[in-house]
Length: 399
Ligand code: ADP
Ligand code: MG
Image 1 (tube, rainbow, N blue to C red):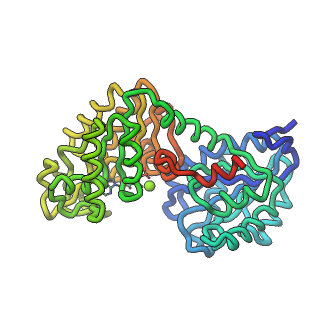
Image 2: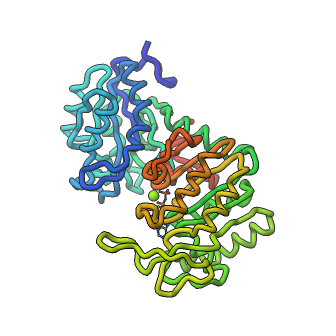
């Protein structure tokens, strides 16, 4: 019997799998295939069970119409290499090519449909428009498996609406991710430390609200630091700053103090006069975070801060890290991120890395993924879970 996750015998059945294959591309070159590799076990389990697997996924943010720059074709090739079997590629998502490709599948074979976001119905805010597109997706399959953890916080046709139209199950990757997040929220082992960084500042401030109630320590680096430094009355030069969030940050600092939650901000930063760009040699300078020159911008936490952050993680039994500490893509600004990653590999307890760029940083800096407790494939989704928000793509599976 070819059982999968409560779907019954899937042998010979067409199973639509929503995967997250949104990998960084340089032209048609995949620069980090972590998300493709993370998708393989579920697909393998289904093909081993004899299913005809139809993978639906997105890449980047095309504007609801076909755009060759966002084609999933290179991903189909890589996926085939990892599965050790050819992956048929459909040149559209629900059109003639998709139907013919799915019809051509034999038991145990895999097809990948073209970027689902080439269709305006995928991300439409109109239930009817999404529903109509979901109908066409559902017509390609007999069952649905939700395995794209990076998109479960999105109410989109291939994540949410299609699950209402087909017998459905949670894929193994999503299950693993949710299990880890439960461990972070339901009675985490203490001390519980959270490291936040990256560049999506306002997206990530919301989670602090919740963390002030669950975490013991909050370490803040990356681009969001400067809004906090500003809130403390420091000038931040040309650094990333969200002026309208300064009061929010001030409020967090005060509430943390009242709640006995330690917020650690960098005491020194690495600055340069320009954001790194090709053809310009970086000129990194370390300055105290209270003395950022007006003509410079902060691009990494400084060495003193990196050591302090590592020390603050040393005895932690639970750590969640989201967002690089600096512009790690450039060597001169990678040390802070490296120090935090290194500290996570030494945690005696549960260490979790969330966020696409954070996970890519871990790999790019040469760390062994096995030295981390869990490397999540979904940054936004894990943050929203930790914020206590409902994830539509999960809720719909529970009905
Ligand atoms: P994640 O994908 O892990 O959630 P984000 O997408 O929020 O992280 O941010 C990642 C990006 O943040 C990286 O490309 C990095 O270069 C950038 N970044 C880190 N520190 C800074 C900084 N001080 N100023 C500008 N960008 C930064
Ligand atoms: Mg990112």
